[in-house]
Image (cartoon, rainbow, N blue to C red; front, side):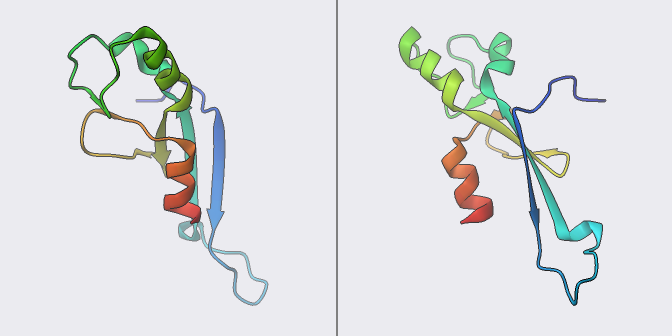
Length: 98
């Protein structure tokens, strides 16, 4: 099934190349960042589909939708705690580039 949502950002992490040769495809990691608000239609109060849980106050929930992202690494969604696991950009940067 093809993803119909477009990522907000795509980051590529490459391992160091040897002697000027092109690195094989397994030496690159493609990290796609999707805004969490793409999945807002699946949320309802008390939903266990999202991790971390969404706040019930509308202002806090709006902040969550704007600052949390779903992450797909090499075509696979990151996270196993819930169906929709979201992260901040800082968490993603720390994990893959820190």
